Image: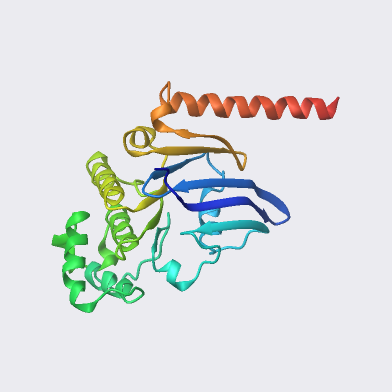
Length: 250
C-alpha cells in the first residue's frame, strides 16, 4: 500500500530584500520516512523549513501538512521542531526546561515524570538534569534541543542540523534516535552535512543548489556514493548556469 504524504509544498517562493531566494520549492514527504535536505552553504534550507512551519511568510505558496492546508494549533501540537540555533533559558536546569516545554502540549501531568526521565536517557543526559543550562557545552545543548523537539511524540519532526558539534559517539546516538522515531511512526525531516550518516538512515533526499531543488531520489536507488552524486549534480547545475549566462550575453 502506498504511503500518504504528511507534507507537501507546492510552488513555495520567497523574496528577501527584493531578491528571490526560494524558487518553486516542491516537496512531497511520505509518512514514516526519514527525509533529508542537502545543500551547499547559503541555499536557504532553514528558510524553507521556517516557511513550512509558518514562522516566516513566503510570497506565494501552498503547503499541506498532516493532511491539512492550515497550520492550526491542533496540527502544531503534532509537530516537533529543533532549530539550528535555539535560545534556551540559561537559568533553568535541563529538567526544568523540559517541564516548561511540556506545558505547550496536551500531555497528562501524571505522565510527565516518566516521559522526561525517558528523554534524559535517550539523549544520555540523565546525570546532568540538575545542572543549569548556562553551564552546558554546545554539544550538550544540541541534545537538549533534540529532546524538546520530541517531547510531544510528534507525527512529524523537523531537525535542523541535529548532528552539528557532535562527535561520532553522539552522532550515533542521534542516528539511533531518528531510527527509533521512524519505527514509532514519526516522519523525520532533517538536514546535515554528514553524508555518511544520511546514507545509513535516510529513505529519501533532496539536493538544493542556488535556491532550487536539482535532485530528489531514494537512497536505496543510489548507484554511487552520495558525496560523489552531490558534487556531480552541483557541477552540472553550475555548468548549466554558465551556459545560460553565455547565451544571454550572446
